[in-house]
Length: 76
Image 1 (cartoon, rainbow, N blue to C red):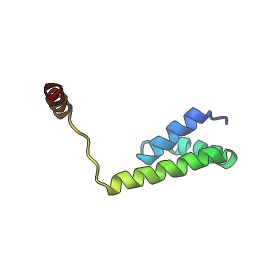
Image 2: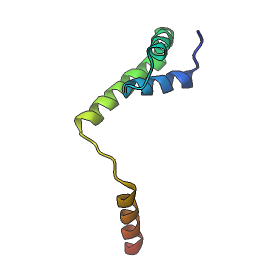
Image 3: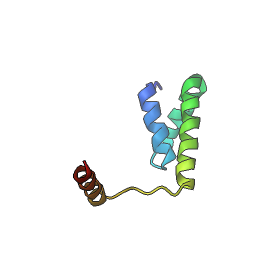
């Protein structure tokens, strides 16, 4: 079972949002046993996800983004 660094990062991110399958999580855990730098990435990613959830961050709608962009262009 060989997993590339990019695939491990993708699985790590998916697992943070509950989108990874059990097989992907197993692959990630085995990978993290051998590659400590990726384990650090995983830990930082978990912390970031936790902080974002605590901050109750919300996404701006596309309509609001466009309105903000138009307002900025007017002011320039």
